[in-house]
Amino acid sequence: MTKADIISAVQQKMGFSRRLTSEVVDDLFEIIKKTLLNGESVKISGFGNLEVREKNARRGRNPRTGEEITISARKVLRFKPSQVLRKAINNRS
Amino acid sequence: MVKRELIAALAREHKDLKARDIEYMVSLIFEAATRALVQGEKIELRGFGSFHIREYAPREARNPGTGETVNLGHRRSVLFKAGKDIKKRLNDN
Image (tube, rainbow over all chains, first blue to last red):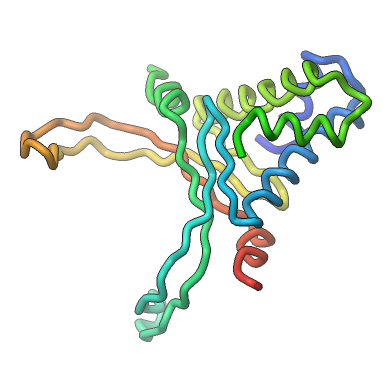
């Protein structure tokens, strides 16, 4: 599924123009992105939470060459699916 | 930031739409995403990141509180992979 499929799904139900619908979808993900880049978590009830995590530096290895390297401290995004989403994806069959 | 605040932020950028319609659009977006994940489909959002399903094999685990052995069946969860742009911008201050 891509952004285009999401836009189609929304458009079918709302009946707004493709252009307006796609603006809203883009703006939504843009707002989420900006919020995360500010270091703030985004919580979407029924779907999940996205948060910025600080990772400490650690020793790692290049899996191809076996060479030891230092992986520097960095920030990563973590998604925690909500209870509702976890149930939904596990109750299929 | 929670869903309600996301909707409010979107509404500020879309004075052309009713708040109620924006709220409905946001729920349609996450419903569409949930539907795709339930079907095992990956969601790819350009400039944002992707969500995909990871399958976990059944295993025996222990309740760390009681030491009791529990059987975990086949499970699925959702992983998020941040897009290149976000990854980069999170780390260049």
